[in-house]
Amino acid sequence: MRFDPALAAQQAFHQSKAELGHDWDTAVELEDTFSCNAGVTAREAYEGLLALAARYPQAQSFHAFCIYITWQQATEETIARHFETGMKLCEAYLVSREARTEQDVEQIEELYGSFRAGLGLEEEDEIQVEYRKDTPKGGD
Image 1 (tube, helix red, strand yellow):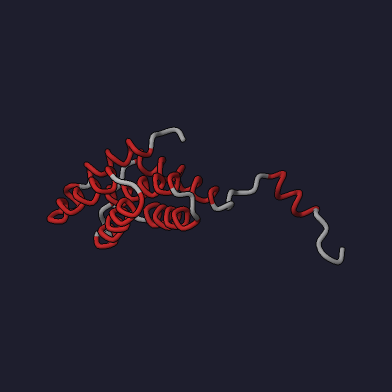
Image 2 (image 1 turned 120 degrees about the horizontal axis):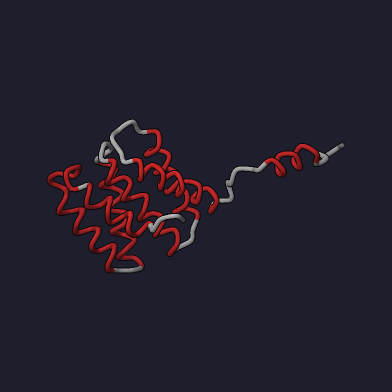
């Protein structure tokens, strides 16, 4: 990675204060629980943050924050569900036409590739494409 997802998460979180309005205090509490704990407690706080994001589809900074913390989840607990969640969050963020920072877009595009790679969905390079074309199929 060409950036630190944890630092990017902190920056995006602080930028999301205005987006969340009266739910900002809830977000702060959940983020504090997520950051200061591990295991089930952190996972429940993480799920709470994702649920809060679902209630604010226009909150681009908060959505970026959720993508960054999903990467943290994926690196701490390497299971397909985190990579799948990360891909879905990235896809929704990248197709959105809402205001977002260029830095977040670039970083989230990079994370999107990492989530895909974690699931074995990397793009094929030219050699792989040619190999697949030239490989005999059943009955050839």
